[in-house]
Image 1 (cartoon, rainbow over the protein chains, first blue to last red):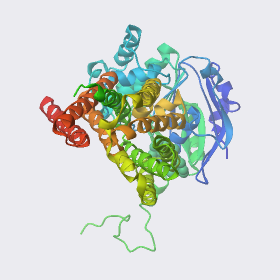
Image 2: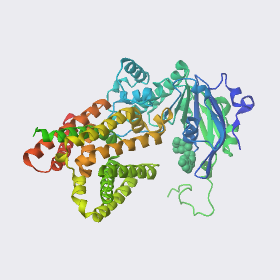
Image 3: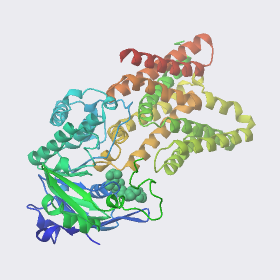
Image 4: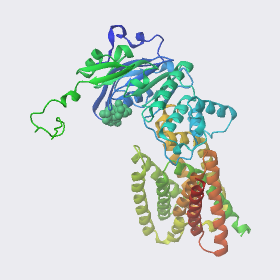
Length: 294
Length: 261
Ligand SMILES: Nc1ncnc2c1ncn2[C@@H]1O[C@H](COP(=O)(O)OP(=O)(O)OP(=O)(O)O)[C@@H](O)[C@H]1O
Ligand SMILES: [Mg+2]
């Protein structure tokens, strides 16, 4: 059970599939948590200037893999190479999943972003002009300038998401890791934030790794996909990975991939089809069966 | 009330107020008011224990609040500190009661550790109190950004920066130091009021961290000064005024916050 690079061309060592040397690479990583194997044989690389999507259903292990990438969880096997990222002063940055700050937190959005700049240093945050400029610029870039001086806990989930993104970007990191940043957003903000991630990656040579349960919002900006399911992963370009044969092999049961109007529908033919098959042990009409019209 | 025999009271009271204001800002920010409640009880138990052994109460207070801090840190390693702090509190209060029972001769001295003896502070006691207070303020200044970042952002701040366990330990050391400085002066029960009330009041109003700390110190100073003055004039216990002042400042802040929004 190891991660299969999708398609013949992308197969083999991870770096070969990237046009440029990776700033971070995950090599054959396996994680056991609480005695349970969560993922195994995960391998992928992150290149500067690219958005990589980490896609998988709930519980697939997306958050776990991201935390391994960041060094917050130690892999049980394999290793993560961060030498490329460590060479840049900004290092790694993280926007956790659904991190809602305390509603009463006595900080403004700009204070929080400022902590992205120097929150790891000792001492008090002196309000210098340079600091203010960098913070303003980061807030501007994510479209959060309008609520820079509001208390962070009073902002909506989507607004907080933007501020946290500004916090991640302000120090010019080499790698930005975002866990489901689109989950709290309406369709328009979803689009905006996805575009923003693409722009940030391209303009600032950042490697962006972003998890999501749906590929579609990321399609316009995503260069590569790590598809996670059943504790395993496939890595490659969207075209290579999000295909019926590849996902069928990953899920170990038939998966249809439909491309409609520029969108991709991934339809597992597992439990969804079984609903229509009558269960011999169950009387007809009980839940899960075909609804009867009286 | 500004007679020379009161100089020690004013100096010690001010030093303790500054420390309580600064430390309180982080205690409230991190939602650790319970630890701030438990540690002074530890200090009380330690002072009582020291009295039994004929040692310095301040030494005992310091040792026991450190012990309490370590217990809280170990028990609460994963997740929040509430339950761990509650257990430590019960344990410490129980041993304090035991020590009190064992040392009847020192009971009055230990009793004052619970409720403070601000009026009894002489000029000779102030250098030690001021020195520990200064150490607290410097430590809080050094930890300012990591504490703020970790409290507000959790893991997102740990990625680039310091290990959360290190920040946590440093914070508890800070709380221990502050407790050791303050308990012999304002007493274990009032220490909590002075740490939590001004910071909680200011949290409702201040938006930026520097303003928050400054405001919290100002309110704590105001409470202590007013309490000393009122205590002197009425000869009611100062502790009463400190407790009432804390509650009053919080109430006023709530009112202002309500009117503002
Ligand atoms: N500390 C832990 N101990 C034991 N099991 C864990 C731990 N953390 C996560 N898991 C398990 O690992 C699996 C993957 O969890 P993870 O949070 O990585 O999934 P995810 O893909 O991020 O899901 P979601 O889309 O819901 O965020 C889950 O089954 C979860 O129960
Ligand atoms: Mg997750």
